[in-house]
Length: 390
Image (cartoon, rainbow, N blue to C red; front, side):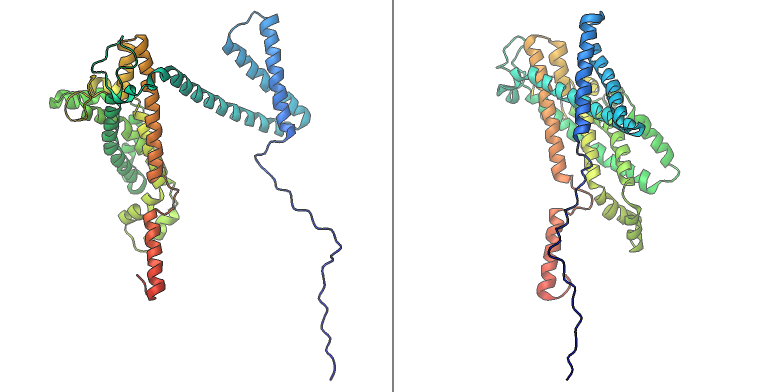
């Protein structure tokens, strides 16, 4: 017998040093050569402008000081970047600085407004009666331990609910018509919706006042206020919902049509569920847009210090109208603090509504609901135990 030789398998060189792991590139990480020029340019701009304002030029004013600081900061930062890099890097970093500074300015404005309202309204909101009582037996000179805004909160919630029930379904249906159906009427409908988007708030209140209160002979109540808010909310929901529906990939519609589904089943079972999170966000934005409007309520809601939980009978005060009454009609020190407290309560209401809407319907596109996941798991158990399709 002859021995058969097997080819030797090449072995790795154990003495070779291990290869270093590849360095991860962080696109959003800021390096030292990017941070220090920004800090140095900002410090130099503030110091130079301070010297000019205080020692050289007869300039005054905080706004002018910070505007000059920002302009000089951009000039210094562009010069420092030009000494380190080329022209393309200067353009890129200047655009980045402008975008970041604009975002920080917007954030500072929002935080400043919320902080100021919270600071001015805290003496009122820290009392429990502010959230549980009405202004029925409270005068403008009485202390903050008496009276509250519960009648305005109830009125705003009911009026916003009426506006949402009317505007969201109609807006989504109009968006479906514009995005999925189209036709000869699509262009004039889109023009009307676009024109209604720029409709002044007071015109919406006058429209409901003329068509509902004067023509039909009804009185000012929560229903009329909800109709006025729905008129304002409808074009916002329609325009934004149309954009969300157009963002749904056409391949999903084509796949549904290929399986033999009709157009309405495709819209109902494919397009709308895919755009569910976007439509929820649109609804919330529409609610946030109209919940703080005062002008439509001046003609439709009526002003009262009593709690009226029936939006179909009698005047019903909303939170914006209540704030206006606190600060403009009886502008005493305590009433102004109650007005700022009501403004803080209105901000809290918007935050709660936004959070609830995101929890209830704000899932990502294509994400299954809990009921759908439970149904899929149940079908899988049936197939495993019985070996047949459910």
